[in-house]
Amino acid sequence: MKHTYLPLKCLPFVVAAALAGMSATAQASGYRFGSQSVSGQGTADANGAEASDASTIFYNPAGLSRLDGTQIVGGGTLVLPHSSFQDTGSTTFTGRPTTGAAKDYAPNGVVAPAIYASKKINDQWTIGAGLFVPYGAKLDYGNQWSGRYAITNIKLEAVALNPSVAFKLDEHHSFGFGITAEYMKAELGQAVDVPGTVAFLNAHAPAAAQAFLGKIYQTQGPAAAQAAGLALQNAGDGHAEMDGHDWGFGFNLGYLYQLNEGTRFGIAYRSSISHKLKGSTIWDFSQVSNNAAVNSFISSASGKVNSQALVEVRTPETLSVNAFHQMDDKWALMGDVTWSRTSRLQNLDIQFPPTGEGAERIRQNWKDTYRISLGTSYKYSDSLLLRAGIAHDQAPVQNDELRHPALPDSDRMQYSIGANWKLNDKSSLDLAYSFLDFKDAGVNYTNNCSPVTPGCTGNGETTKGLFKTRMQLLGVAYNYKF
Image (cartoon, rainbow, N blue to C red; front, side, top):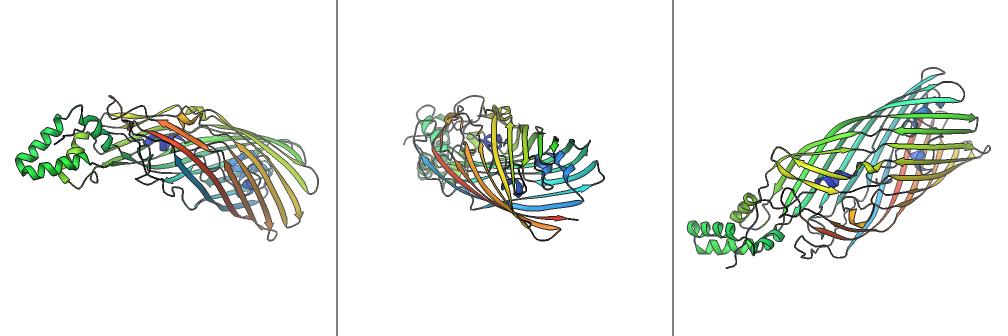
């Protein structure tokens, strides 16, 4: 009988990759959810200086100074992704090919709501507040796909509350300030490469398995020992699950310059927010085999115990410059350039206190990004305003070797149309449709920490393949003024 051995530091848990983005979506680059406003979506978010409704709280809080009375905007965006993955040679740390197709890993549809409100206090002061979804991701590849040792599933949710105030100095200058309270929650799953570790150490250090099988032989007899040995040789994957959550706080600033009645320029800054996501890590070896003694042995020999989990992340700050020009009674043009400091994300470590287990290090080395958008609106009638926009959005990922399947991001183009339909003097509807065309994204990511690397946690896998993604966004919002 050929014996096997499982080391005391078996296998990884790439939680950090799920939290690595914290940057910028479904629509914008990284994990940031790009559509915070249906009216903005209709112009591909080129409307930062338009300030047509209370959603200006997100884009430029100084725009509140242009709103009269009390206004409320409430709506949501339905995200419809279409994604596929083609494996081109994923392997375990021993070089063994991994197999298995990714199931339909993107959700059929996800809805992200947003609500904003504003109230004009006097000719100089206006207050408001927004509640929106700044970040989001949801992928479920299943437990059998070829990249399972990197990730099986991820769910990232964030909700931000953003009270704001604007001050109008005179007819030309307005200033805005807001405070952001952000709640973030993340979940991630990953397969544990028990078969690869068993195979690697089978020839290098079989002593532990021999002792285990010898004990089974002595206590339960030769048949039980033979069954346990066979179960070890045919061991399947383990699994790990992690979750974490945290509150973080930041601020945003805005300035709006009104050149004349039809032309204005804006600049807006949204700060970085620091998060310490704390939660738990659960290791599951119960499905490794149908032999309870083997599962117990692997769980013990792995050295993995359920513990706390901690990852520290910092969202990138953004700086936007935008302009709006009313050309005539019908047409308006607008544009926006937004810079995101996504280079804040270099190496990211997931820690497992208080066990002292070596951290999982995720290499990202993201670069700063730009998003450029141009939009227009056309007043078809007194009750119908039409919108359109186009945008180019850079991805923070530098190359295939640093692209992880938790975020198969790439540069993309966005094409949007929208409309505002005035129902009466007090209420209206905003509608928007966007199509996002992502560049094909190659991935060739190798985890530098394997189960036999001292001082760290990792599967040592290589995930190699090609992601193809397209996305549609459908938005609807209701506006009320009183």
